[in-house]
Image (cartoon, rainbow, N blue to C red; front, side):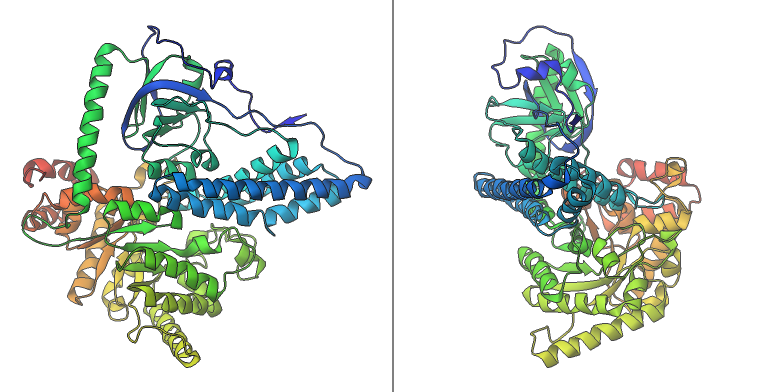
Length: 624
């Protein structure tokens, strides 16, 4: 017998029953991962999903037809359930609908002619596995193949993307198995109003069932900040902490908890003193949220009147509502890899055009910078492998191999299709085109030739594209590109400095490798000098330059970047209000003087100390 869900803790079998009156119990503090800011106070409510049990693994050859029929029925039922779930989204806040609907659509597509469904059918026929056993086996194989791409030098963002893809496959598999075994799904019907939901795990489809008006907060024992569930909880505006080990076993019906979604702490059965402090924190957070809401409508302008462009990075379309809520004035980095993921064929021009146009239209006139496909050996994109564009086995060192613009120039049909789609979509609003992993002037020239050739072809074909082509810029993410910035600035229309890869390549450090992660330091003097060199090269040519790595999202580094001459920052949407608050509290002259002193230093620790002390020595008090 094979189980796909762990048995529920004893106390959680009471889920859905009325809570008993609170009893005096010992205060307990738990630490988890902060995923959705806010403070919540309320009684706990535990819930689990009933386990699905597979009672048979093998079938007879004569049963193949029947198992295929069972699988097709489960697929049809799963599609019907997801369609119903999507229709239910109408009761959620508009931003939550926009967040969750695309993911449900992706689930529905994966129940079509996908790698998963094809593999399950093959396992039934060739290995005589039952339908549910075949689903589990194929899911595990796909998940392992996806995570096998996590090379040592893989960035945190790319690793998170691999985990999301594996989780998406797992979510569809769980739904199929539950329908095959006729196991009930999790229900939140008995959730008391104002309570804190506690679960061992909360899947994206579960999050879609939550009513934010009834919830005080959410806590789970599993999960992290980069999954779909975390993104959805943020969209719902529910204070949430994930990855809180041990809480579900420690709590009892009637217990009260304080959840701090900003610090990742959960206090079970708080003392009177702690409860008073929690209520104060709740009030303070409400005031802070109101202040950030006011900031959203205010310009990012320093105290001496210098404007700074604040934009957001976008990895998946489901993040669009967060960008709109943040007050960002456009998308500074749209990663297009999502279009190529979880599919067997390379998206054609029409498919790409529609996707880009939807995003551009959603920004209502704010600019969108679209980075063309940035494939590297560590990123498994099945469509590229099946088409013979990239090898099945990654390079020995994918960070130094055929990736980014190098691949696109080797396979110009990929670049031509993507550029054609971007040009057609640019009629919906202002767009810029960004080339990844550029290291030489010849790469920019070759890409521009392709760009202009595609534009001529579209005009001959009768397609409407802008009379003046959108700007063509490059990523500065290697020391070679930064040190060649003067020459590259003669060929490119703008720079986007990717500080994540620039730091890794400069220091020869993979921040995902625990043995050397402490050496990953974007404030290392060498990294700062490369940023300064590239920025000054752009400014001399009077061309735009932006920072789009994690450095841009760190408010404590904002004065230094402003002092180096940067006037455009692109970051995760949640960081925009905090960075804007810093910008509105400083003057450029003080930032310039500060940057000069920092750039005279050759010791990272001294630079860290100077950055931490800026607010006390160089900057006026933060503006309200």
